[in-house]
Length: 176
Image 1 (cartoon, rainbow, N blue to C red):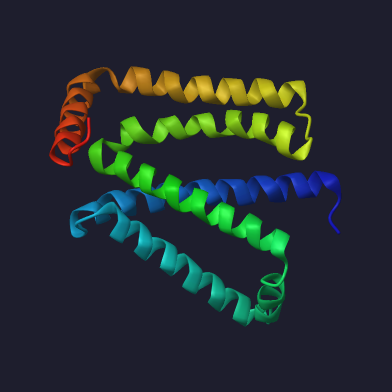
Image 2: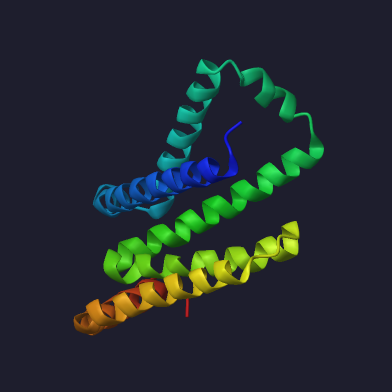
């Protein structure tokens, strides 16, 4: 086992790697919008691909039997199904945001995620964040929004067009 100080740095490495990967994935998702007639098709392809890759990784690690054994655990299955429904729902909503607006307007709203995690981890897991952790999340979230405000000043016309397109799409679909 690694000492705590080394574990922290390893955790930072994984978090940074995930951030870079997500940035690339978001760009690819934005480009893929033009190739699909609906967001559901694109999100389905992404999720099926995720499952296939994860199954290959489990097979290579010799852990497919652990997956099969986990399917017999009702509590784990409820967690898995609930998690999957939330993941698909959030992917569809996020894909719609990427379809309608520039990434520079959509992605900064994800900076609010750490704030939500502080609250949900407190209530669901009993984790109590340290004051400096809360301060860091507040600074990071405020910084992301401040950057968007500064860089987004010229985007007000773009945002108006996005809102008009969404209203037109809702009207065409019979929504309000």
